[in-house]
Structure formats: structure tokens, C-alpha cells
Length: 145
Image (tube, rainbow, N blue to C red):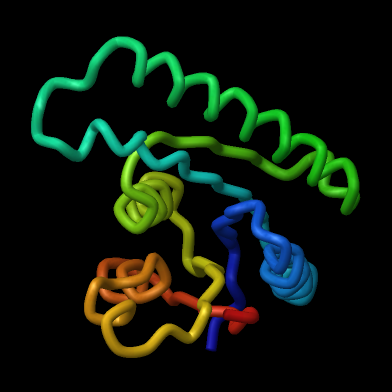
């Protein structure tokens, strides 16, 4: 098996998100790989109505993206990843994670998995969506549900 060269870790700022990041850092270190952190800000609820997005909602989403950029910067400083690439996107998390991975020639995506069952699984989780859409390897790190 070839070593990974570029690892993308999807960060959602949940309490157990640090476990996911730690696993990605371990893998990047073991493979001497580049590590990129990605946070996806989901469009606000009103965007899913099928109607045009009101300008106020666009402003809220952009503000959330700005806050996410700041949080990623702090997180990188906290864990000593000052040189790591950081990306914040707006959209559907599973689609944006896969798109960014393809655009940046990522060969491993690290995401968190809450081990959902039943209706939650049928509706689809981000980890499940990434697993089925990605063209590269995906590591789903089990975190508390």
C-alpha cells in the first residue's frame, strides 16, 4: 500500500472533533503527508425551501464562515499546525468535502462517524455520504453518539 501524500480532515467543531483531528495528525505524521483542515458551513435553513435565498441569510452564512475561519486558525495554533492548510466552504458538507478532496488531489479523507442507525442512517450522515461519493480512501473515526 502506498503512503498517503495529502490528507483532508473534515472539522465540525463538535466536542469530540479533537479525536478526529488527532487521528488525522497521527496519519499525516506517519505518512509524512500534507494535512488540510476543512470546515463546511451548511447553508441556513431558509435556503432549503426552494425559494431564492434572502440577502439576510447570505450575510448570516458569510458571518458563520468568517467565524469558522477564525476557529480553524485557533485550533491549528492550539495543536501546533500553524503551517497546515485551512479551508472553509459553504454548502452541503458531504458534497463540499468530496469536491475539495478532488480539487486538491487528496488521497485520504478523515471524517467523524457517530454510528447512527435506523432513520438517521436512512436519511444519510455526512460520513456515509462522503464514503459513497469520494474517489479516494475515507477513514470514518468513531466518536460518541
